[in-house]
Image 1 (cartoon, rainbow, N blue to C red):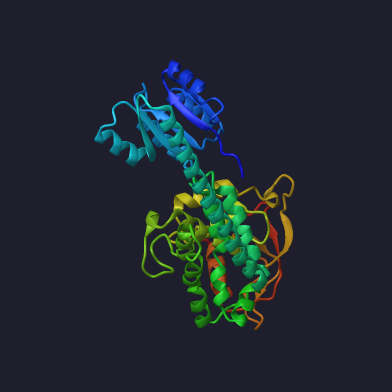
Image 2 (image 1 turned 90 degrees about the horizontal axis):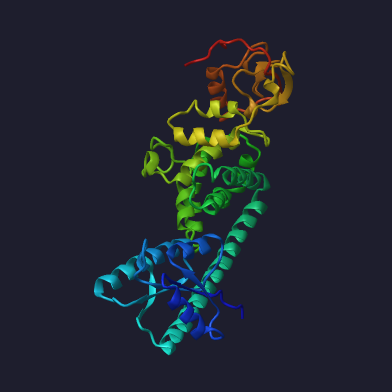
Length: 401
């Protein structure tokens, strides 16, 4: 069986700590800290303790405050208290805030102290064993779901992996409290697609236009995803994020009823942005122009969060280097990657022969919005050829404010 981490004794009385060392040497593996600050420094430095036994009366920070901090920094540590003043108020404060497993009155009998510590070590074993079991179950369940999605449609799974990569990259800069939760939500966001008929799934994977009824079916897949994810222990928050991933910042979108603005979970607001970003990015290069396009729908996203994500992800597109490429650079692209300011070298034409935009023009904001609407219901001849960057005119015909 794996050996437990040591027990930590905390007291501001160095003589008392020396006495404990003499009494417990050879009986319990332990460490000592002279006062609360030293104890917290040890834990913040990475030391792990199975049990912490702290004195109640210490300067700067009492035992209740110390054990409350330890409960935050090391939630698996079993906390105990030594006190010569175990009144009711002290007991209530310690239990509510310090998560106390056991009290010892001063002076404490050696046998009682050792017996209590042994009980604390057993409690630690129970807590950590249960946690390990849950984590293994959680990892296994998630692995099954992601493998199902990967087998179902590798293209859709690949997009989910890309979104997860972006989540991992931005989590720290946006102050996300549990980065693993955000990444997992991104990975499981499309799991509701398992409920879709094969023909709709195929059209989604190939990015073909959907009929109105098909779009409505796809729109409701986050509800299926929430039901699937909710069956896995400890993923309630992830299930909620996935369910609200398509809810707009102004309260529109799916579901029709629910939180609005910053009451929408942060993870869901992140996915709302990154899911749409993934629809217009076809490479690892995320640039400012992608976010300019997202801002054409200001009611959909949290504006402050959009700025933060742009700052974390967007890079300079080398095509726009006017010194290296004064006339811009030419590219063959798919329409999803068309940006405002691109100069058309070929017509944009549907497969039915309808010309939407003619060559020889710069793409304006209004034209791009119109094109995105047409892409929902028509298929186009692709790729098209464009010139990007260079000395474009200051104002583009058709641009709206």
